[in-house]
Length: 281
Length: 331
Image (cartoon, rainbow over the protein chains, first blue to last red):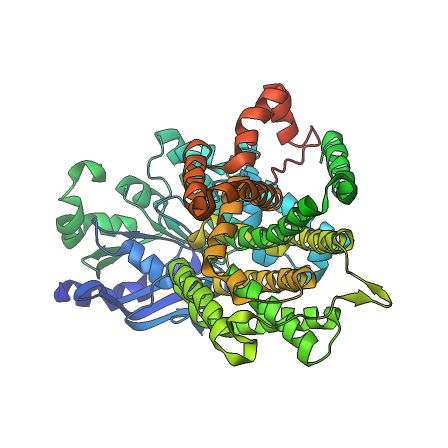
């Protein structure tokens, strides 16, 4: 394991910082990050750089620590060691809401939604921190706050439209089919107006048509200038959508690079692809 | 709000105002109690919005009552000033106490509240400063200018006024940005913090605003009982406050607790015949309510009566905002 890390860690980062013709600038940097649960090392010595404007795939077998990495970035779990730097600011010790306010939004692996609210209200809650009207004004329902409210509503409807949920906007989130719920999860994250979007298994449980749509949308979101990190189980989707891929196994990084290189990487095949051939097809 | 609902609310308001002419003094006393308990039930439903069930309400109610009584008795303050200061005391004390419990989640908050309610009760009784188990002694009646709130109808109207203030503030809060954040916390803690809602701070704001209004109910309590005694603020009563919200329907943060308080208060007057078995009978009724109408009376009306009253399609159309295209399902 140690050998693999040494081989790929530093070489690849510098070579692959030019992505899609743009010069990559590091937006998020994980420096030697570790997370222990008692004696279990869920993530150890992880160095990871996410460049501005890329779609970065994060893959690995079950229990490789992918979701843990998301939880560390968003502050949901405190890191045992190392530093996380976002936009030049150390965010290692920040609480989840503070991380979100700095422009990192996420969707969840299990769908968390405000189930008793409509789709529109769900997305509006995402706008929570972007509404500029002061709290007292808002409380007294001044015209200015109403104006801000209407603006938020318009933007929310735009996002709903973009995510293909227009027909469902007045339905209760809890009543939506699974695929739509995942799309709504992404919509809420988008409403936070993020710089960096973390998607945890965005296409899990979707049918092929929904999957294609979602992949298309992820690309469009990137084209709007939002940097994306995708954790995904389906290799086909990851290879399809990612500009760059990092492979984790047992909480360590075993490879990093372009999709085509990852496909050919022996260690990755051993750890991941060989284990589940059908997924790699 | 539809026209029919507005008319219904107007009739209800007129009925509440006319109540002193309709009821004998004994029943009017029950109405006064109902008003007080409604305020406490509203505070319970209020904190439930952020996913925090409170079992310390009776304790803070006592803090409000004792602060008002002692300030009037020993510092010669007017009722109104004492009420304001009592509210501020409840908020500051609440902040000092909950700053430890709030970041540690719902369970810790709940247990903390239980201990707090018991501790307040014990302190009121055993500390000489509060007048011991016999209470504070008689305090003066509240006055405005030369007018004294001495009789039941006047005291009833005073309570109705306080209740209206409670309702107005809660309503405005629920429909503001703060209310939206509270709803988010209440329905999914993880998601709320992932969109940038500071859960601890918003919960704290909720609980402290609640504390202010609970203390207000305490002030109102001493305005008609003219004394604060520890036995009124025991931990048991906190459980009754929870029952108001459950029976009324806890998804209805405004109407639910008031309806629940009215039913339970009125019913418990009839349960006096069973004497010391009253808690057991009440508990049995609550268990039946939870089994047969888990969303309370208003929840039952929502599910069974409303769709039956209105044609289903019309109902769906109304939910979408009556064709205005601005769909809003109010909680």
